[in-house]
Amino acid sequence: MCPCLVLRSGRQDGIRMRMPLESSPKPSAVDAILDAATLRGARRPFRGVNLRAFLLETAGMKMARLTVSLLVAVASVIASEFPAANPTQLAAMLKRAQAGDSVVMTDGTWKDADIVFAAKGTASKPITLRAQRPGKVVLTGRSRLRIAGEHLVVDGLWFKDGSIKSGSVIEFRGDSKTLATHCRFTHCAITDYNPPDKKTDYKWVSLYGQSHRVVGNRFCDLTGTGARAALCLMNGIPDSPLHGYFQVKRAYIASNTFARCAQTIVVGFGKKNAT
Image 1: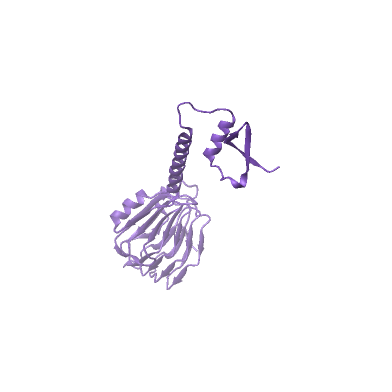
Image 2 (image 1 turned 90 degrees about the vertical axis):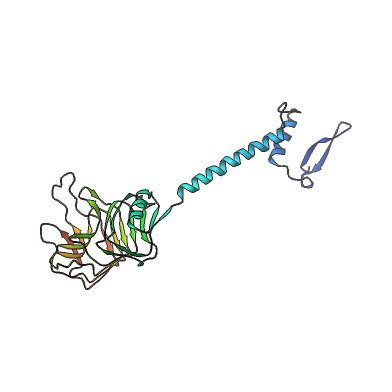
């Protein structure tokens, strides 16, 4: 017996007319509900209501809610980029950045830029501070960078022909109370960034904290006779006080280039002699 469809309008002399399903157009979801309501004997399932219009309107409302939900979900995963053309704008954009965002420094020469990159990203959504084009953002004068937060990335900057009076050009901490963890310094360069006094205690990159990566950078022409190093892993403080800094752990250093540097890497810099 072939499958058939009962036609509501097909009663003649008490006989139901039958037609093969394939000869009938496929009913819509709304038609299926109307058929089900009719077969149950409800000639008007909702009195005073156009059921077809009601069902279509309800379906439209559900689709609209689904569309809004999808747009909200997509918006929540789309990262933002914040351009900055000068140090003042850069400070403002770094404060706005959330997990997954990027702050983009405009190509050109940045003089005397004191940058504090203090933010908190996540392992899957780090916050990135990068050059508009790698190597085209040149920091000179007394420019320096402090990385103070979690899951931060610095990418594509070039420190060139400048100097600071003492300390480190780049530090993985904001201060002695604000250390960094899980941060990355990559595709950057520091060249000929030396103070006039060659005996000055001076370092280019100082690591504090834990789980950092220094990968794919270039360090050239570090001069002087003081306690200097292109890259320095700082000593922790024994029996550290609450706000002292702890030993550097799980640092990953790879694929960096060192050329004509008085010292390349110093491990364990502090009151005792480093190696």
